Every structure is written in C-alpha cells, then in structure tokens.
Image (tube, rainbow, N blue to C red; front, side, top):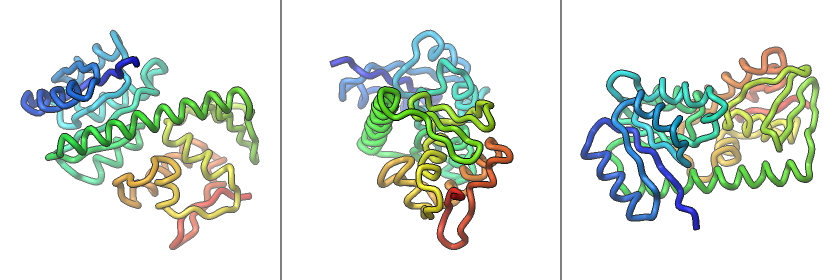
Length: 234
C-alpha cells in the first residue's frame, strides 16, 4: 500500500512536532515547514496528498497560501485542512471560500486531527472515484445555460468555462441535479462535505453567495427559500 503524504505548515515547533509524531505513527509520510513561502516551495517540489495549514503564520499568512495553492492548476485539487487558533467564523468562512476542505480549531486533540485528516482523504478519494466513474459512463448534463461535466469537474455558462473550487462544484452539482428541490443548509453540508461536518449555517450562505457571483447571470437560478434553504430553479 502506497503511503499517503502530508505537509504540515505550522510555525510553532512544539505543535509541528506533535502533529508530525502522530501522523508518522499512523503510517503517513510527513514533511513540515514553518513559513508560508516555504510551504509554496515544498508543494511545488513535491505535491502532498494533504496539507495541514495554520492560518496564523508570520509573513505570508495561511489564507494567502491557501489562495495561491487553490488558484494554480497543479495544486488546486490538493485538500487543505486549516488549523486556526482564532476560532473566528469569518476566518473559517474565508478559508472555505478559498477552497479549503476542512478546519480544526486549536487547541485540538491529536485523535481528532487524525480523524479529520482521514475523513478528508477518504472524501477526496471517493470524489476521484466518482469522477472516474462519471468520465467512463455519465456525460455532461445541461440546465438552462449551464453545462456541468462531472468527469472533468467543469462548468460552462453559455460556453465559457467558470473556475470553481471543488466545494463550489459539488454544491452546484448537488442543487442542479434536482431542480426545484429545496435543500436545507444541513442537507447541503451533508451532501457536499459529508456527515458530521462541524461548520455553521452562515458558512453555507457565504458559499452560496460566492457561487452565485462566479456564475454571473446564471447565479439567479440558485434561489433562496426563506426559512428553509436553497434550490435550483427548474
């Protein structure tokens, strides 16, 4: 079995060593850096399977690192779990909007960190399998002026490609596959991120706003159902 690799980006040495020790014990390959600039160089040299990224870094902060990685074709699909001491909802929402896959608030239990890391890696593997299956069988589908290609993780609006994060793509696909169906915020969280994903309803609202903005005029098809959730207009 091929060992999965994890890059730790954390400026506090004791936390970095604690995380590294527990990951190594579980059989992961581990590399660690203390600075955002070092993280970008490390990922460019050898892309890992997962990045554990502290938001509060000296110099280039974690949100900037996340933004840069998620905007490069070579690195945009690498899952990122944010580590934050703030616990501020605005920081968490900002990171998720940039494409981060999960977050853990400090102080955290090593067991919780390992469980969340495994969950993200399993989710990514499942999505890759779904994309592979889709590319072999199910082709693109169209609704209104949108064309959604599951195998390519590609969305076109009136023939123009729209650059979405993996979370935004899954969110759009969830809604567009069942036009007219109203999804609660919890159903959206479960469908996009999996069960027991610890984040607030407000994060869903902000992600919807970001998705609408990227879709331009086609964003109007994502409708708010007050007091319930969201639906894609049929």
